Each structure stands twice: as structure tokens, then as C-alpha cells.
Image (cartoon, rainbow, N blue to C red; front, side, top):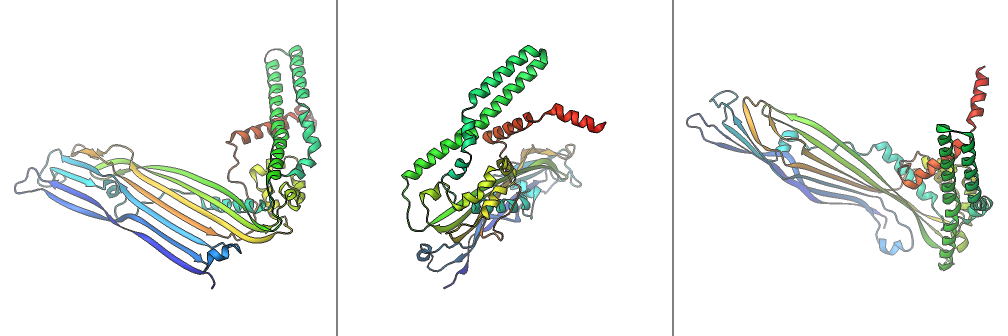
Length: 436
């Protein structure tokens, strides 16, 4: 039997939102207190619906073939939390006119009554659609680029061995050169010029040593650990299913404050929305994985070597997924593609709450006591699992990660090295000669 669609649902939104209003004429004869209950058209509750494709005999077939079924889940949870109560008191009650009631009390879901009675309270701005689309392309391309990626890339390490070892034996030379520069500055310069030149020399020294550690020492340590782990791994001589994975998270936070005011009361209320999305991509292939392949001696690493050896290619990869796009489109000889897809789990939560105390709109007519203390809680979750239409895409990355210490230190050190290599005096002379 072929796969068939299935739809399921649970829960319901049936609980009404209630408000009780009680008013009392205090100065007119033959008048008694009255009370009225209101029910809003907006309902509370929890619902969940799910649509997916079902493959008959999935458990038996899963061991023989890769099965990736589309799926969609929608959850909604809408609630009013707490209760409010406030009372309006007429300053000079009469039997007619605006001061008719001596007291007028409201209790229950007062915030909903004021803000969104008979309407569904809405969410604030979520994650922009174009950002979600770009993130899906980015995580899918990253996943496909990792197909066949081993524990290490010794092929690249061997290609850069001479440069790497040259980096390792030069720290002392770098330190001696820096000390000589400081001594020379001490003899030639005075005052601020001396401080400025010495600061530059120290900064350049630390930037050089940081890059030496990150791109000279750390790769050797990682390669050693990968070789040690590979020697301890038992490799099968028959094809097995290997799955490449990539993931990403997006977040957005918005808040908005507004004033509610009618003829009796006024107060500020705030709507806060937190939206977050988890994206996961996976792709399965069947192939035989040997030790050399796992250590980077494979067709994928060989074709990708020119990109890795390109100067500052890693800097471009911080901002644009050029490297992932390149690797995603390299053929994998000997691989049997089983397929894969992307799942997105998008949740956005909004709360409405009073952000100031309640006051009377016209205190000379009526005063008010009490507070707006109930709040509105909205939660929507949308989960989707699907196969993207394109195999890979070049996009600007959603997160440059410059707020992370290591990436920020790398970026600053690279910038310092680049600026230090520029002869600004010569550039100035050339510009001056052009101007003449």
C-alpha cells in the first residue's frame, strides 16, 4: 500500500470569558442594585491538530529504506489568567445624567473587556517570513554540505603543514621583534607618540599570537584527537546508513504599550510577544565508511581543498554560506542517497497585561478604586516537516556570531593583521600625487 494522509485533532476552545457588572443607585427612591453577567465571544481553551502522511508497515520498512513523511502540527492555547475588580463611585449622584449610578463595579476578565471584547487578542510581530525562508535554505545547505564529513580533514592539514609548522616555531621571534620595536620607540619617540606606537605593537603581537593559537595549534590538537578516536573505532566493511545533520534557532522579541481610555477609566496596557523557531535538517546516505575516509582522505575533501586553502575564505564563510554551497554540490562517489528534509518548530507566545494603575477619566464626576490585574495568555505552535524544493542555496547567514568571544576575537585579530599590512603613508602619498 502507498502512503495515505491522516488528520487528527484534540481539545476545544469552549470556556467563555466572563465579566460581572453591578451597579447601585444610592440617592433615588425605589431603586435597588442590579447585576449583569457578560460572556465574550472570545473563548479560552487548548486545541491541537495534526496532519501527516502514513506509510503502512513503516516499522518493518524503516530498517530497509529511508522514509521521510511530511507532517504538520498546529497547537493553540488561549487563556485569561487571574481576575480584576474595580469600582466607580459618583461624586454627586443624581437620578438623571452621567452621575446616575452611585456605584458601578466590574469584576472578572476586565482586561479583555477593555482591550478586545468579542475579538481575538492578537500576537505581536513574529519572525519575518523572509528571515525564515533564508534560514531554511541555510540549514538545508549546511546539512547537505556535511554529507560524508569525517572526524577530521587531514588532507587539508597536510596541504598546510609547512605553513602550520612555520607558525609554531615563530612565537619567540614574534616576541623578540615586539620587544625590539618597544625599545626603538622608547629611543625615537616621546609623549603620546610613544604610547601610541607601543600600544600598536602590543596589540599586533597579541592578535598574531591569537591567530597562531586558533589556526596553528588548535588544528594539530584536533587532528591528533581525531586520529586517536579513529584508531579506537571499529569500521564496518559493508555499507551503512549515515545521517548528516544541521540545526539553527531564530528568536524575536517585541513589545508595545498602548493607552486604553473610555468615558469612565483609563490605563496603560502592554503586549509582549516572544517568537522562537527551531530548525533541524537531516539527510541520509548509505556508504562504506573506512578510517581514511573518516579522516578526510576522500573525494569530498579533495575537491573542497582549493576553497579551504584560499586566503581568508573562512572569513567569507562567517557572513555568506559560500563554503557550504560549494561542498553541498560536490558529487559523492559510492554514496546511495536515501533522502532527507527539514523540520521547523515555530512557537510564539504573547501576554497582555496592564502596565499602569487604573485612574478615572473624569475624577470630578466619578472616582475609581481597584485594579486591572488579569492578563491574557496566547500561545501558538506550528510544526512542519517537509523536503525543500532546492538542493542548496547561497544566502547571507542569519547569525554572524560576532557576539561570541571566539568569533569576535578572530574577527578583531584578522582586522588588526590586515590593517597592519597596509602602508598608510604610501597610500597617502599615492593619493596626493593623483590629486596633483
